[in-house]
Length: 330
Image 1 (cartoon, rainbow, N blue to C red):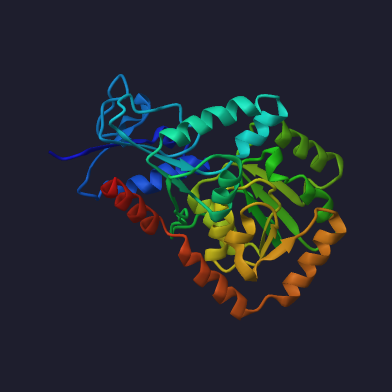
Image 2 (cartoon, rainbow, N blue to C red):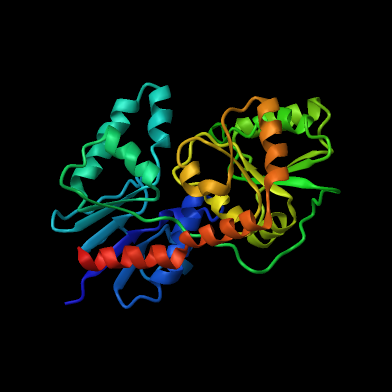
């Protein structure tokens, strides 16, 4: 009898999020697999699903594709795979005094899991440090790059050279440091794309306006993939000062086009950026300016070629094949 594999793809409902992209791109390759794969997805996204029952159905293998998935297999005989992207939520819960509760719940999932995968070696090291993984099969499977080949010129096109960055505008992304930095590089403009629902984004826009940078710093909200590709292709550099990342997909995307990378040296980003990125050791504006100017003067065609070659490590087909092999193994 063919074993039934059930995958929690609920996050596909938010295509602009990292988890939404994770689900959508894995699904593209999973659909081509001969394995008996089904998807657990909200009913208003039926176009993505083979079958959506009212309750979590029985399966031989269940894959929770992120650590905060609320779903667990109901049968103790079901093999449970858990993918952990980061421990960002643990830090956020700790701030509100509920860190121990979150940690206990995640440990219970780890204890139940047959296999645990991580999207970076950094995340693996974080989890290994803070949780008990004795006897567990573990594996690092990198995310892939999903940029298409079609570009679309966006509505906002800066005149002159500009830097680009993208990501949900949240405090952990640390984007506010780009304001003082931009003041020190008057020959450049800044385009920042990403969801703007958080009050942090509104505070950044307020500062941009109050400090007279509205004609140089463009906070443009969400964009589609062809527009994002246009910005990558036309920017002179990519900058990403995030302080909490389990992977850092925008860094890998910019790398695939050979852009000079100016990124934080925090969490997983050095693992993704490699030796040819330029690292921000702190976020004081003059330091950032000095790293940027030195990097732009140092960047060569050879560095660009090495970045593009490194980006091949991050491939959705390779990731999908690794997950499919795990399904078969368990």
